[in-house]
Length: 463
Ligand code: HEM
Image (cartoon, rainbow, N blue to C red; front, top):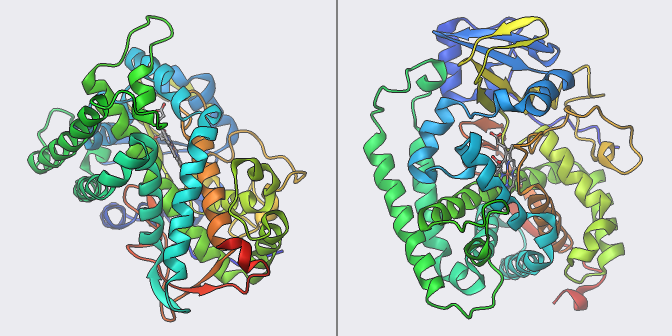
């Protein structure tokens, strides 16, 4: 069993003073928590004019996100401000009737039952990446974060727009989304601290322009798609065009269609990319885990690319990825604005307050996990001791749980299985790795590694 403790930011013994806290928050949300926060179960803090409540135990998480979700389903003002120009009233940031209506239409399209359509796209794209790596010299340097971002962006583009349109437009879509995310990454975090909703934000214009560029690209792709109605390629756009609200029978209008395509691209690409990059890093530091993973891949696949049917036969591969999501959850903070007055553990919470569930804390909580900071994939193997519901929430929990959880997990297992059976990655000497979080949790801006082909017992089959 691995005894590797991967890096995490320094945990101060006492909470920071307000000026230090503000500086820390502007650089890295993960570095702001004192050591005791990994033991507290429900706590509150004041950030300037805004009171913030943090649910940090399975019962309080379940109370807010599952049993009383209707009072806590609204996303925080910061999240809504940042994403509205791009996503409009898209599922990710809407609530109430619109959310319920869109969820009924969108969730079935990226549901587990659709995986037979999309898994072959995932495997083919990963095999293309393997061919690219195969052409590199042994020990060639790569940026593993960028490699994984390109891989998952290519997969999600081909999934949303169909193989051909997706491959044609992938780079324009990726560039325009990165530009938008960079701009909102620089967003003032004052909304979080209580800046009133009505105050215009300075970055508004440049963000709006960036969103308009994305909308133009998406509209062009949708128009192209519509002009080829007999195209039988599976795609999210095709399924969205055909989808009808199960209650009203309504189809999505053009704007809603574009918003939901943008939601799926945004929600479904960087999350998987970051966690795959972390997986490569963790494997590179844990030879025993890497050896066990290789053993499973060689035994089950014998050198051939995986299929959807192989996924249940790869429990260790999946456990490695699930443990990575525990240690480095790509969405490390889930933020909500309460809609009604509430009470949690006897403490009144006024409507309009900010409430957080922080997977970063919960996943390393001392009362929930044994050796919480260690990398131990075995905890996720079938037969391992059960965890309380609400203690492991990389995909959130309750009615707003990630609609693409099965998609993301399957994609990660298929990509890892394809690439890890042929290659090892090693950290470039002298590289320091530390988790940072602005919007999503990532290993810094780059993850410098080197690629090494494995001695394949089944080299012929892998061609
Ligand atoms: C490892 C991969 C992924 C992780 C860790 C992840 C995590 C999450 C989390 C935590 C949320 C809730 C955010 C919040 O409450 O503030 C979410 C929402 C969502 N995710 Fe994912 N996600 C992943 C992959 C995907 C993929 C591949 C797709 C689509 C193909 C997707 C589609 C969505 C959608 C549509 C929502 C909005 C759900 C709603 O509000 O009802 N996600 N995801």
